[in-house]
Length: 196
Image (tube, rainbow, N blue to C red; front, side, top):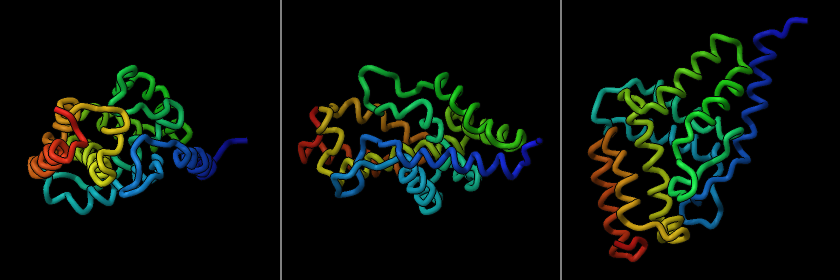
């Protein structure tokens, strides 16, 4: 018996529920509870809507929203790699591409192809939409860490220069947001969250 498009879509919807169980290292604002991937993706989507005016380029906001909502779905299979990990590269794209093809492949072919393409565009980080989406992805945990007296920066003894170098990617999508983020990173040194 042939599986209908609706049955494939429902199967995908059930599969991605697993993203709610993927725990990140960062904690919610002013909290001891770790954020999960679903919460993170939702937060980025709202941030993108609210902060879109600060993009350095004119962007297709719907595409940015698609990117931030699906970018971490691959972690259902590939797991979450800590941004400041010293043992595994955060950009484990090959492993994640296998996951993307399996998970998005549950959908009808046309939808699967679209979401894989959008995910790959985000990962490549070359279009204006991908640059802005990645800015949101970098900015949210920075705000969380700052609100938690250094959060993972303190917990994992991440030095100032590593935070500054990695977070500088925010500038690719928004100079305004990067200037604000850099001021927080520098304030983190003053408050002794980060060591120079």
